[in-house]
Length: 284
Image (cartoon, rainbow, N blue to C red; front, side, top):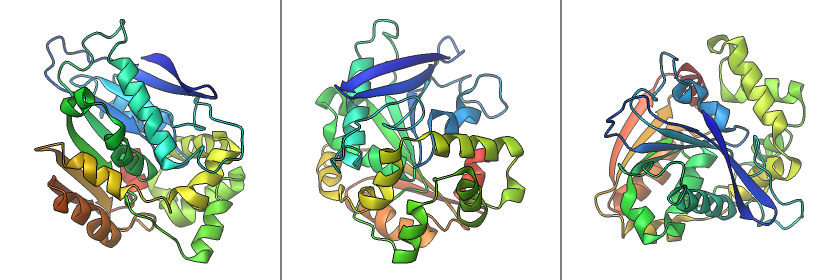
Protein backbone atom coordinates (compact mmCIF):
# COMPACT_ATOMS: atom_id res chain seq x y z
CA UNK A 1 0.00 0.00 0.00
CA UNK A 2 1.46 3.34 -1.07
CA UNK A 3 0.31 6.94 -0.68
CA UNK A 4 0.39 9.26 -3.68
CA UNK A 5 -0.23 13.01 -3.80
CA UNK A 6 -1.37 15.05 -6.80
CA UNK A 7 -1.37 18.85 -6.98
CA UNK A 8 -4.58 19.39 -8.94
CA UNK A 9 -4.79 23.15 -8.33
CA UNK A 10 -2.45 25.61 -6.58
CA UNK A 11 -4.50 25.14 -3.39
CA UNK A 12 -5.59 21.52 -3.72
CA UNK A 13 -3.54 18.40 -3.02
CA UNK A 14 -5.28 15.08 -3.58
CA UNK A 15 -4.18 12.00 -1.66
CA UNK A 16 -4.74 8.48 -2.95
CA UNK A 17 -3.85 5.02 -1.71
CA UNK A 18 -2.73 2.56 -4.37
CA UNK A 19 -2.52 -1.18 -3.83
CA UNK A 20 -1.19 -3.40 -6.58
CA UNK A 21 -2.64 -6.84 -7.08
CA UNK A 22 -0.72 -9.82 -5.76
CA UNK A 23 -1.74 -11.76 -8.88
CA UNK A 24 1.20 -11.72 -11.26
CA UNK A 25 -0.73 -12.06 -14.51
CA UNK A 26 -3.97 -10.37 -13.51
CA UNK A 27 -6.23 -9.39 -16.39
CA UNK A 28 -8.46 -7.32 -14.10
CA UNK A 29 -8.93 -3.54 -14.41
CA UNK A 30 -7.86 -0.96 -11.89
CA UNK A 31 -10.73 -0.23 -9.47
CA UNK A 32 -10.94 3.47 -8.50
CA UNK A 33 -12.88 4.23 -5.30
CA UNK A 34 -14.63 7.56 -4.51
CA UNK A 35 -16.13 7.92 -1.03
CA UNK A 36 -19.35 9.46 0.28
CA UNK A 37 -19.78 12.89 1.92
CA UNK A 38 -18.07 12.38 5.28
CA UNK A 39 -15.88 9.48 4.19
CA UNK A 40 -12.31 9.07 2.98
CA UNK A 41 -10.17 6.57 1.13
CA UNK A 42 -10.24 4.43 4.29
CA UNK A 43 -14.02 3.96 3.86
CA UNK A 44 -13.10 1.17 1.43
CA UNK A 45 -10.43 -0.44 3.62
CA UNK A 46 -12.08 -3.86 3.76
CA UNK A 47 -11.89 -4.05 -0.03
CA UNK A 48 -8.45 -2.49 -0.45
CA UNK A 49 -6.41 -3.92 2.43
CA UNK A 50 -4.46 -7.03 1.47
CA UNK A 51 -5.19 -10.06 3.62
CA UNK A 52 -8.77 -9.22 4.66
CA UNK A 53 -11.44 -11.77 3.82
CA UNK A 54 -13.16 -9.28 1.50
CA UNK A 55 -10.04 -7.78 -0.10
CA UNK A 56 -10.03 -7.35 -3.86
CA UNK A 57 -6.27 -7.03 -4.07
CA UNK A 58 -5.61 -10.69 -4.81
CA UNK A 59 -7.00 -9.99 -8.29
CA UNK A 60 -7.55 -6.24 -8.73
CA UNK A 61 -5.24 -3.25 -8.38
CA UNK A 62 -7.08 -0.52 -6.44
CA UNK A 63 -6.84 3.25 -6.12
CA UNK A 64 -8.82 4.82 -3.26
CA UNK A 65 -8.97 8.62 -3.41
CA UNK A 66 -9.60 11.22 -0.71
CA UNK A 67 -11.85 13.85 -2.28
CA UNK A 68 -10.76 17.46 -1.71
CA UNK A 69 -11.10 18.51 1.90
CA UNK A 70 -11.44 14.92 3.19
CA UNK A 71 -8.92 12.45 4.56
CA UNK A 72 -5.39 13.56 3.71
CA UNK A 73 -6.47 15.71 0.77
CA UNK A 74 -6.46 19.47 1.10
CA UNK A 75 -8.63 22.05 -0.59
CA UNK A 76 -9.00 25.81 -1.07
CA UNK A 77 -9.48 27.97 2.02
CA UNK A 78 -11.58 30.61 0.25
CA UNK A 79 -15.31 31.17 0.31
CA UNK A 80 -16.08 30.68 -3.38
CA UNK A 81 -18.99 28.25 -3.49
CA UNK A 82 -17.54 26.55 -6.57
CA UNK A 83 -14.44 25.41 -4.73
CA UNK A 84 -15.99 22.24 -3.28
CA UNK A 85 -18.57 21.67 -5.99
CA UNK A 86 -19.15 18.28 -7.59
CA UNK A 87 -17.58 19.60 -10.80
CA UNK A 88 -14.47 20.77 -8.91
CA UNK A 89 -14.07 17.35 -7.29
CA UNK A 90 -14.64 15.66 -10.66
CA UNK A 91 -11.90 17.82 -12.15
CA UNK A 92 -9.54 16.56 -9.42
CA UNK A 93 -10.37 12.95 -10.33
CA UNK A 94 -9.75 13.56 -14.03
CA UNK A 95 -6.40 15.17 -13.22
CA UNK A 96 -5.36 12.36 -10.87
CA UNK A 97 -6.17 9.64 -13.40
CA UNK A 98 -4.52 11.55 -16.22
CA UNK A 99 -1.34 11.94 -14.17
CA UNK A 100 -1.48 8.28 -13.13
CA UNK A 101 -1.21 7.35 -16.81
CA UNK A 102 2.24 8.94 -16.89
CA UNK A 103 3.34 7.81 -13.41
CA UNK A 104 6.68 6.10 -14.00
CA UNK A 105 6.38 3.92 -10.89
CA UNK A 106 3.16 2.32 -12.17
CA UNK A 107 3.60 2.05 -15.95
CA UNK A 108 1.11 -0.81 -16.37
CA UNK A 109 -1.61 0.38 -13.99
CA UNK A 110 -4.10 0.98 -16.81
CA UNK A 111 -3.13 -1.96 -19.00
CA UNK A 112 -6.54 -3.59 -18.39
CA UNK A 113 -8.50 -0.34 -18.17
CA UNK A 114 -10.28 0.91 -15.07
CA UNK A 115 -13.63 0.85 -13.29
CA UNK A 116 -15.00 3.86 -11.38
CA UNK A 117 -16.70 3.06 -8.07
CA UNK A 118 -18.52 5.81 -6.18
CA UNK A 119 -20.69 5.89 -3.07
CA UNK A 120 -23.47 8.50 -2.72
CA UNK A 121 -21.73 11.86 -3.34
CA UNK A 122 -18.79 9.92 -4.77
CA UNK A 123 -21.11 8.36 -7.35
CA UNK A 124 -22.25 11.81 -8.50
CA UNK A 125 -18.61 12.87 -8.72
CA UNK A 126 -17.88 9.75 -10.78
CA UNK A 127 -20.62 10.61 -13.29
CA UNK A 128 -19.51 14.25 -13.45
CA UNK A 129 -15.90 13.22 -14.10
CA UNK A 130 -16.79 11.38 -17.32
CA UNK A 131 -17.12 14.63 -19.26
CA UNK A 132 -13.69 15.76 -18.04
CA UNK A 133 -11.79 12.65 -19.13
CA UNK A 134 -9.55 12.88 -22.16
CA UNK A 135 -10.47 10.64 -25.09
CA UNK A 136 -7.78 8.11 -24.14
CA UNK A 137 -9.07 7.90 -20.55
CA UNK A 138 -12.64 7.44 -21.78
CA UNK A 139 -11.43 4.61 -23.98
CA UNK A 140 -9.92 2.88 -20.94
CA UNK A 141 -13.11 3.09 -18.84
CA UNK A 142 -14.64 -0.38 -18.55
CA UNK A 143 -17.60 0.42 -16.35
CA UNK A 144 -18.98 2.18 -13.28
CA UNK A 145 -20.15 0.80 -9.94
CA UNK A 146 -22.51 3.17 -8.13
CA UNK A 147 -23.27 2.42 -4.49
CA UNK A 148 -26.42 4.20 -3.24
CA UNK A 149 -25.74 6.92 -5.81
CA UNK A 150 -26.82 10.52 -5.46
CA UNK A 151 -28.62 11.56 -8.67
CA UNK A 152 -26.75 13.54 -11.33
CA UNK A 153 -29.66 15.99 -11.42
CA UNK A 154 -30.29 18.68 -8.81
CA UNK A 155 -31.59 17.39 -5.49
CA UNK A 156 -33.21 19.75 -3.01
CA UNK A 157 -33.97 18.12 0.33
CA UNK A 158 -36.86 19.16 2.61
CA UNK A 159 -35.81 22.00 4.96
CA UNK A 160 -35.66 19.77 8.06
CA UNK A 161 -33.37 17.23 6.39
CA UNK A 162 -31.15 19.96 4.97
CA UNK A 163 -30.87 21.59 8.41
CA UNK A 164 -29.91 18.25 9.97
CA UNK A 165 -27.23 17.61 7.36
CA UNK A 166 -25.65 21.01 7.91
CA UNK A 167 -24.83 20.09 11.52
CA UNK A 168 -24.39 16.33 11.02
CA UNK A 169 -20.58 16.40 11.28
CA UNK A 170 -20.04 19.24 13.76
CA UNK A 171 -19.02 17.03 16.68
CA UNK A 172 -18.52 13.41 17.66
CA UNK A 173 -21.92 13.36 19.37
CA UNK A 174 -23.59 14.76 16.25
CA UNK A 175 -21.88 12.15 14.06
CA UNK A 176 -22.87 9.29 16.35
CA UNK A 177 -26.47 10.56 16.33
CA UNK A 178 -26.37 10.70 12.52
CA UNK A 179 -25.01 7.16 12.31
CA UNK A 180 -27.70 5.84 14.65
CA UNK A 181 -30.66 7.74 13.24
CA UNK A 182 -29.83 8.28 9.56
CA UNK A 183 -27.02 6.14 8.23
CA UNK A 184 -27.40 2.72 9.82
CA UNK A 185 -28.56 0.49 12.63
CA UNK A 186 -25.64 0.74 15.10
CA UNK A 187 -26.23 -2.88 16.14
CA UNK A 188 -25.08 -3.94 12.68
CA UNK A 189 -21.80 -2.02 12.92
CA UNK A 190 -18.70 -2.97 14.87
CA UNK A 191 -17.10 -0.47 17.26
CA UNK A 192 -14.30 -0.09 14.74
CA UNK A 193 -16.78 0.66 11.92
CA UNK A 194 -18.42 3.40 13.97
CA UNK A 195 -15.08 4.84 15.13
CA UNK A 196 -13.87 5.03 11.54
CA UNK A 197 -17.02 6.85 10.45
CA UNK A 198 -16.56 9.32 13.31
CA UNK A 199 -12.87 9.83 12.52
CA UNK A 200 -13.51 10.40 8.80
CA UNK A 201 -16.45 12.75 9.34
CA UNK A 202 -14.66 14.84 11.97
CA UNK A 203 -11.57 15.01 9.78
CA UNK A 204 -13.14 16.84 6.85
CA UNK A 205 -12.41 20.55 6.61
CA UNK A 206 -15.20 23.01 7.38
CA UNK A 207 -15.82 24.06 3.77
CA UNK A 208 -15.96 20.45 2.55
CA UNK A 209 -18.48 19.60 5.28
CA UNK A 210 -20.72 22.53 4.35
CA UNK A 211 -20.47 22.21 0.58
CA UNK A 212 -22.53 19.09 -0.12
CA UNK A 213 -25.73 20.02 1.79
CA UNK A 214 -25.43 23.71 0.89
CA UNK A 215 -24.85 23.44 -2.87
CA UNK A 216 -23.32 20.11 -3.98
CA UNK A 217 -26.63 18.25 -3.95
CA UNK A 218 -28.33 21.01 -5.91
CA UNK A 219 -25.68 20.94 -8.64
CA UNK A 220 -26.99 19.47 -11.90
CA UNK A 221 -24.28 17.54 -13.77
CA UNK A 222 -26.68 15.49 -15.89
CA UNK A 223 -26.18 17.33 -19.17
CA UNK A 224 -22.42 16.97 -19.22
CA UNK A 225 -22.67 13.38 -17.99
CA UNK A 226 -25.18 12.55 -20.74
CA UNK A 227 -22.92 14.10 -23.37
CA UNK A 228 -19.97 12.03 -22.15
CA UNK A 229 -22.04 8.84 -22.05
CA UNK A 230 -22.97 9.34 -25.69
CA UNK A 231 -19.30 8.76 -26.56
CA UNK A 232 -18.82 5.78 -24.18
CA UNK A 233 -20.26 3.04 -26.35
CA UNK A 234 -21.04 -0.22 -24.57
CA UNK A 235 -20.47 1.15 -21.06
CA UNK A 236 -21.94 -0.96 -18.27
CA UNK A 237 -23.03 0.14 -14.79
CA UNK A 238 -23.72 -1.83 -11.65
CA UNK A 239 -25.91 -0.07 -9.07
CA UNK A 240 -26.31 -1.24 -5.47
CA UNK A 241 -28.89 0.22 -3.07
CA UNK A 242 -30.09 -0.61 0.43
CA UNK A 243 -33.75 -1.36 1.10
CA UNK A 244 -33.51 0.52 4.40
CA UNK A 245 -31.42 3.42 3.08
CA UNK A 246 -33.01 6.78 3.91
CA UNK A 247 -30.16 8.86 2.45
CA UNK A 248 -30.35 7.50 -1.11
CA UNK A 249 -33.65 5.55 -1.12
CA UNK A 250 -34.23 2.78 -3.65
CA UNK A 251 -37.18 4.52 -5.31
CA UNK A 252 -35.22 7.71 -6.02
CA UNK A 253 -32.20 5.80 -7.30
CA UNK A 254 -34.40 3.85 -9.69
CA UNK A 255 -36.20 6.96 -10.94
CA UNK A 256 -33.27 9.37 -11.16
CA UNK A 257 -30.13 7.27 -11.68
CA UNK A 258 -31.13 3.97 -13.28
CA UNK A 259 -33.54 5.71 -15.65
CA UNK A 260 -30.96 8.39 -16.51
CA UNK A 261 -28.27 5.85 -17.35
CA UNK A 262 -30.61 3.59 -19.31
CA UNK A 263 -31.87 6.49 -21.42
CA UNK A 264 -28.27 7.35 -22.22
CA UNK A 265 -27.40 3.90 -23.54
CA UNK A 266 -25.80 2.35 -20.46
CA UNK A 267 -26.46 -1.30 -19.68
CA UNK A 268 -27.48 -1.28 -16.00
CA UNK A 269 -27.43 -4.09 -13.46
CA UNK A 270 -29.47 -3.19 -10.37
CA UNK A 271 -29.07 -4.89 -6.99
CA UNK A 272 -30.88 -4.33 -3.71
CA UNK A 273 -29.48 -5.38 -0.33
CA UNK A 274 -31.67 -5.75 2.74
CA UNK A 275 -29.87 -3.29 5.03
CA UNK A 276 -28.84 0.33 4.75
CA UNK A 277 -25.98 0.77 2.31
CA UNK A 278 -23.66 2.02 5.08
CA UNK A 279 -24.05 -1.31 6.84
CA UNK A 280 -23.35 -3.10 3.56
CA UNK A 281 -20.19 -1.09 2.90
CA UNK A 282 -18.97 -1.82 6.43
CA UNK A 283 -19.60 -5.55 5.84
CA UNK A 284 -17.43 -5.66 2.70
